[in-house]
Structures are given as C-alpha cells and as structure tokens.
Length: 184
Figure 1 (cartoon, one colour):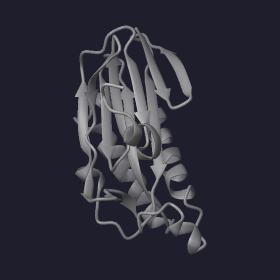
Figure 2 (tube, rainbow, N blue to C red; figure 1 turned 180 degrees about the horizontal axis):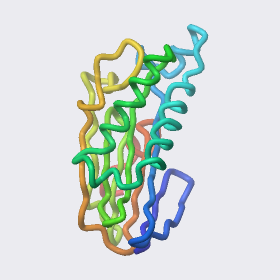
Figure 3 (cartoon, helix red, strand yellow; figure 1 turned 90 degrees about the vertical axis):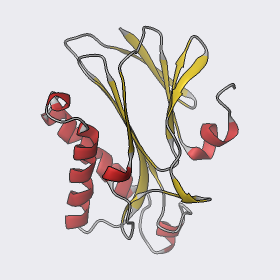
C-alpha cells in the first residue's frame, strides 16, 4: 500500500507492507498563555517540551510495535506516559499534539488535542478531518505545565478504509488549517 504524508512544503511518500509499520508524529509547540513566545519571555525554550514529548513517544513506539494489539487507544497511553515523564523531570512548557500511527493491519490511528489537525484526501477530495479543540477563541486544548487538559481529552480516531494513493496532510493552525477550507 502506498500512503502519502504531507506537511506544508513537504511531501513524503511512505511505502508500507504487512511486515512494516509507519508512524507519523508531529507535535506543535503552544504556550501556557496562548502565544508561542510566552515561554521564551520567562526563559524557557518553547520547542523543548514538544520535542522531548515527541522523543519519548517515538521511543515507546519503537519499543512496542504491536501496541495496537494491546490497547484500543495506544496513542493515548503513549502520550500519557510521556506527559507524566516530563512532569516528573520538571520540564516546563506546553503543546498541542496531532499524532498518527499506521498499523501493520493498515489502520490509521489518529490522536488530536488542540488546534492542529489531520486531513485525509482521496482523489482530490477531503474525506476526513480532525476537529479543532478549543476552550474558547484562541485558547486551544494543550498539554503541559499549568494545563488541566490530559491525553484522555484528545479526540481519537481509527481510520480503517485507507486506499492506495490517499494523501494524509497534517497541518498546524498557523498555516493551512486557518487559511484553507476543505474545498481548497
């Protein structure tokens, strides 16, 4: 099966077979006070928390490639472990998260918390998109220091009907999500 994964200005073609799996991971930094520069204003690198979160989740995925057989929502489990670990290490920061995992069975697990998103495009038509999560305008759900949102608050989807040639687009709110409609 050939599935394509795209971010703005980047297109990757991923080849998958029943013997291999592909994980698509993206975490977008968001700050405690909604503006990405707020963490920098208090001396914290706003990219550190999401980067470390991604590293921990990536390690977990590599260590447990059969995770979809053990849990209905493995991405929630991995994300919760990563958030807990960063809390124990006292790593300050926060982020939204959009994580996708293509399983050996050909199912795409998608977790989205916050205002990033994922679209599945088939034959030029958007046939699936995640929902944006906001508490109120310009205040997305997010994980990390001082936030009450948890991985259990994330929307979770399992797409079972992927087809050859499907295009998966993961985009942050700062670019494609805000500026393009499903029709575009």
